[in-house]
Image (tube, rainbow, N blue to C red; front, side):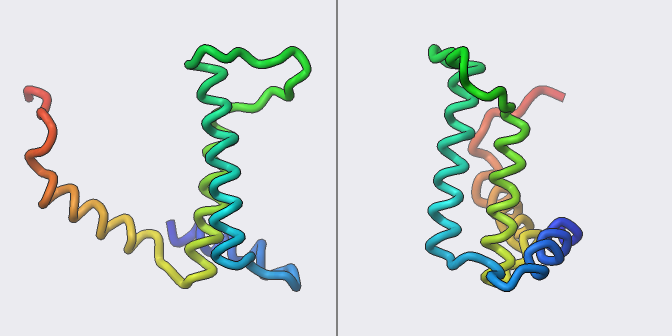
Length: 104
């Protein structure tokens, strides 16, 4: 994750504008989530693509979401690996008995 954050930072750092504000990045994340939802609906829902719609994939939209999320984290100096570890600790303690485990 650190390498991904560094790669995005190297990319963004070459531009004078730098990172967007947290508010703008939240709007961008919301926009990307909408595009992801649209693709999921096309593949798994009841709404097929129109004939003139550009072919995109769920993978591409997830990549867009990841990029914006990394930008957001970088702009606020958040280490996503540390954030991930905090969340996994929560799931492994507080939520350890929440779901039905598969038989081993």
